[in-house]
Length: 352
Image 1: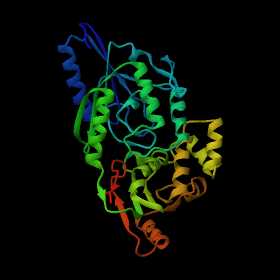
Image 2: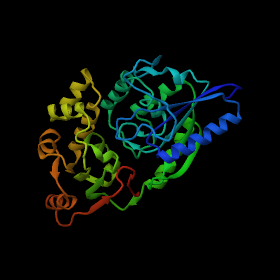
Image 3: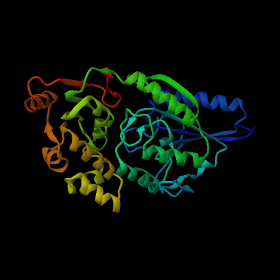
Image 4: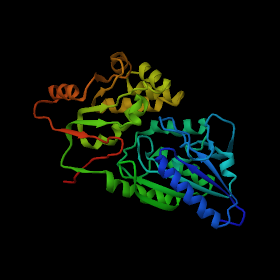
């Protein structure tokens, strides 16, 4: 892949722990220097979650702005997504990604082509890709293709190959495993490893499942509700899910609030989105789909007005009070499962 004097582009997902970013960047740059690379340009994926775009210890780099004007048009995918990717990154002789596998409500898992779509894409490209959720909400426990992921892989193939370092978190702020090589191959291996590490087996589905959104995703409702998908396999049909997300930074997205407030029925929302899709509405669609299947309670600091009237979630101030309410609804013999790392854990039922 390398020639003497080549320019390399390193695209980093800021969700990778800062100290791991620092160490990995040092190793990659040192290794590339021995192979004759003249310059390594650093690029950072843009994330809407409350994660620092880059550690202060890493030298200045380009944080990709999806609303900017620095994109190259590569054409359309078979799903009709116009692929506009970061121009300066594509111009590099060698492209490398540093990313991490985690569950994701839209694509199934991060750590693969999402480093480019949405990570290095224009807002137009991201919106079209996310609109594919109208075709169905994927299950994070499934490793097969879904519309959003397949579309992102098409965009990746149009961009040309990336060498990838794909990390599997251990759940304690460190790394369990590292897979390297061509991006898709590394991603497939990393997902299987992730499921081995973070998919505990349970005997049967529970009547009540308590899911903690975690410190990062639980900062706002827009990201917190996504965590529910990780536990869908653990709860009975029409059972109760209790989402524990502090939401100290509020709702998190105006579009999410607007569409959730305007449409009380999923079918009405789907009809609207087929004609007029907007980022943020895909999370409203996800939540509407979940509310058709389960009773959902929210433990947060949000005002009850937002929780109940705008999002149709039953509010509580503490997890214990939410559990007591759920027992009254499900019965005294209700089986309760508590998932303390709901942002990482995907519990699955043992096969009969």
